[in-house]
Length: 127
Image: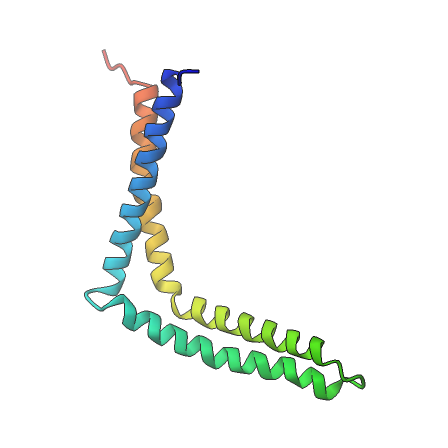
């Protein structure tokens, strides 16, 4: 079975859309970091995440002391879940500006590709 022309154009459009999205993300990252290395931002964000992970783990372990029944497995699970939730929340909060910049730039670049495709499919005849 041979691919038809529409599937080839759709594949080309999808590739162009992905490429423009990745290019926009790189542009947004570079504009937000302003020459600062990405590793420095990620390190600071991870440290904040670790602080909140410790608080989440303590909250999970607090349930161990407050409950009348001593369920070790459930306490460990709550501690791990609280720790993971705390880390993700802290990391996401510290990188929110970078993520927003990357997303805005990617959508802007993808919008250009979508507009070009729309104009190819719906040519405007002025005469």
